[in-house]
Length: 340
Image (cartoon, rainbow, N blue to C red; front, side, top):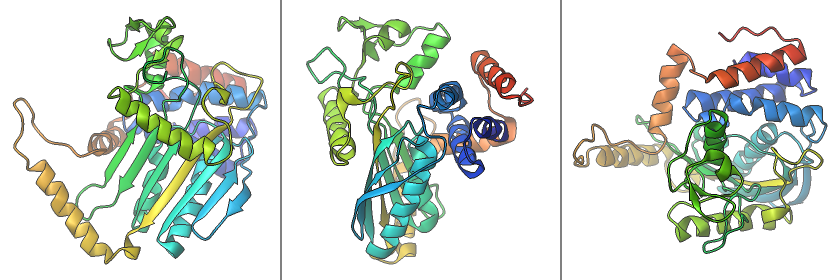
């Protein structure tokens, strides 16, 4: 699937190395069971590339820079490929300064955030990232969408145990899951979203026309506020309703902003000591007395890593609508379809 998607990206002008990154980030999401951010996004990515409202080749311009920080202009590049390059820069800065923080303006949707946070793990670093996006969440007490679902992720190394990886939105659920439910003509659980009148709804299509609810009520709203400040505002770029919807606006760039950072373990003490302590911490969490009906206590990201291991062996199950979409894109691009 990665090779197939890579070929599709190349056919619309994406350089080979960047096509690989874009495809790999989507397939990685599917491997971990994050189907809302996987290859189901191929159709919209390819459409925007064909319309030339996304730059197929990554361009990064430095706006401001210090030893441990920077602001980059992604020049309307593909989000995942640009994000990968910026995270590499954040890792390089953290290697020199201990801690780094980079903001990026004029980018695009970058799929699942954890993909980039995880890049820090092999360098014995803690990685983190977040992104703003088109208005989906109303301010607490309001009715009109203003904030994006504000995905954010972190990845923490461990020793013998699996790393701790969190990837979440400030909303109750990623809007991609509501999009998937609408495509499948399925209802969504009550408490996920409200319709355009500010009423709770289980109708996925009505939810897409309304607003997604923040998790934890005002707590999720507070996190969305922070992410908006640390991405668009800190980068001197677009924020809230100025960010365009990749699914609805086909005339303008989305003007999405992100932040990336890395923390070098070595800057704080012996790396192996940290990893050994992390293992002790993880074991203590997993050995906590289990609630009734609970078979195993999982750490953040553990379910996804286990799912990835299983799907690498058994394959990735995809809904028919996604397979048909990928087949159609192959026909348009002249790429043989061989995913089934």
